Length: 448
Image (tube, rainbow, N blue to C red; front, side, top):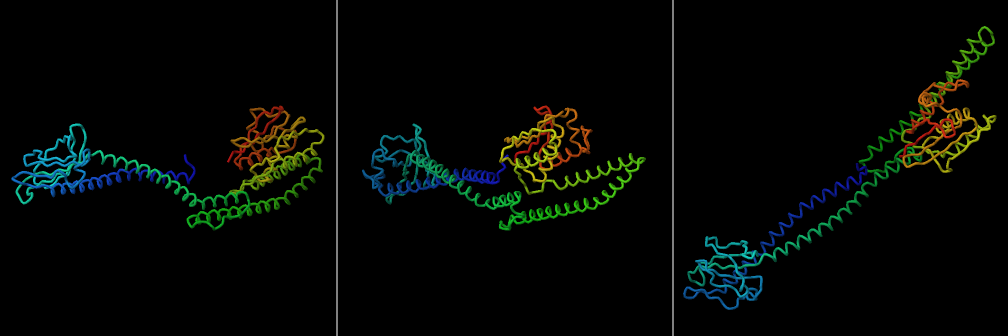
């Protein structure tokens, strides 16, 4: 499938141009052939007139001069031949140029006066023949058929040369036309190219809306896109403000409940109830945080962000090294300095923070982060040398609330957040076994 609009238009225009020229070639050739036949007929008629003007009738017989005024009749080997036949169809005179040429032609006295036709000789040669009936010659009653003959091969050669010139001319014209069409389409589609560049700037965050410096045919589209961008921006602001207000409004009741649970816990007989209450309060806090993260870290519509990966990884690892300083974790960073990922920085921090925290918490002593570019897309990997995840459990732990590690606090929503973030950016998360022996989280970013 051809995805280029310019190439599609070019192929369509080229196809129409070729079809038009293929239809024009036989039409022009036919028109030229008819015009050439008409010119030959007129010339042969003039030659017949020359013979008629030179003819004399004496005593019922035809007298012709030894040399005719038309030089072509007198030159041996000339292409112009002259013949005169009597009423009985007998040849009574022939020009000097026709000596040695046998023409199988018999005039027909049908009262038409003149006739232009084409005949074929015994040897296969073809001739144009112009035949004029004469009933009164030199003031006397006499009937003769005056015939001028011209070989056909001259006409055929001329038509053949014309055909070649037409093919060459039309080929050159088609080449020039296609070049002009390409330039015209390039100029005409500059508006779309400009619109594409502005969209790239919007995706990169370099501008907030599209300009109005576009052809009138595109203004409807640009206006719709600008309304979409404004609506998306305003909706995101309202959404985040609403979520912030929700989080703030829930913070105080949760704090109060936390205080109540601490007071209850002071009574020995209510310790179990206090533990349950605190657990539920913690779960509510984490669920609120999870929903806030899901909403605020979504990919932002048309705007495409790119973040340099290595500084983010180094910052997170530096923080986690302090948290898990008792484990003396060895970190291997196989991330090129210029590598970038198509995500917002906050989303990348949240995603990698969860993955690296899991790796640090579960590893025996080694964590590795790597980034590799492939033609089909980039790949970011986080792996450790911990116990790993059984193959039968890998799909389950990516579900919200599912955990394999029951010894440490948490509600099992970290990996669910990671999965949501990754999928919101059109990427894919897979879980495999690492060569280090533990879990390997592989994030595959699709090539654009």
